[in-house]
Image 1: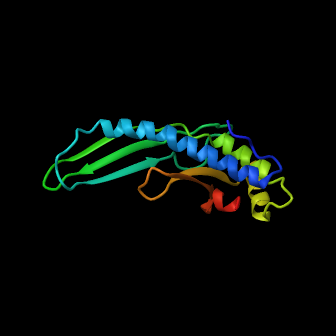
Image 2: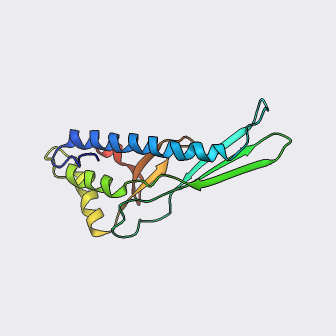
Length: 154
């Protein structure tokens, strides 16, 4: 488990990177299982769309993990559209919240980070993992508003 980076902005950046890298690894294993549900095709061209859909809105109070639904759509020209779905890896939202709260205590932390920590504590903001484009990569955004947590940490 990553350190929460308490009072250390650089440590928080590193901890967030570790969490996101570990999540990427864990989720890729489950994404591979979704791909495995579709038979291979010999067509030279087909379109695939991967969606990593996390539940909308704030996580339930006290949630430490939230799991997305993985959906793969394969479109073969002049052929059938095939779909496969499964649950993705649980995202450690509680751990990322702890990283934010710890980083907010760093004297060099931007005021926006302290404001976010206060809004998280008050329940007027929440953290939401989100898919980057149609890639397998996930970032964490502060909601409402959508600020990327990685950018807030510098």
